[in-house]
Image 1 (cartoon, helix red, strand yellow):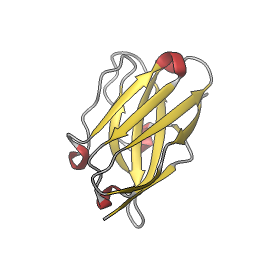
Image 2 (tube, one colour):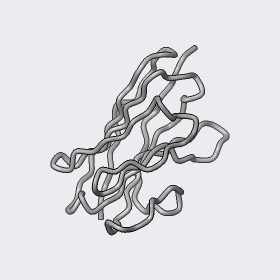
Image 3 (spheres, rainbow, N blue to C red):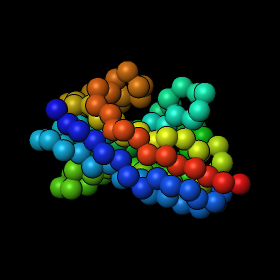
Length: 127
C-alpha cells in the first residue's frame, strides 16, 4: 500500500507558475502509475496528466496541453506537476493518485482506476 502527500500549492497570479510535488511512502514506488487530478468547486474531479511506470507520459487534459508537464523521480518516490502560464480556471484542489500496474497496462485516465490518493493541495490563480 502507498500513502501520498502533496505539496507546493498556493496563490499565484495569472501567467505565473507553480510546481506541485507528491511524495509517496511504502515500497515499490516504481511499480505505480501516477497521475494528477483536480477538482474545482461545484465540479467533478478531472484527470490532468499521468505518468507511467517507465516515465512515459499519458495524454493530458485539453485544458492544460502545452502548459503542464509531469515527471517522476523514482529514487525519491516523488512525482511532480509543473504548471506554467496558469489561468484563473486552473484554480482547484490538485490531487495525486497512484495505481499499481504492469508495464503493458493501458493508461489509467479516470478517477475510479486509482485506489490511492493524497489529501490534495489548493492552487488558486488570481486574475
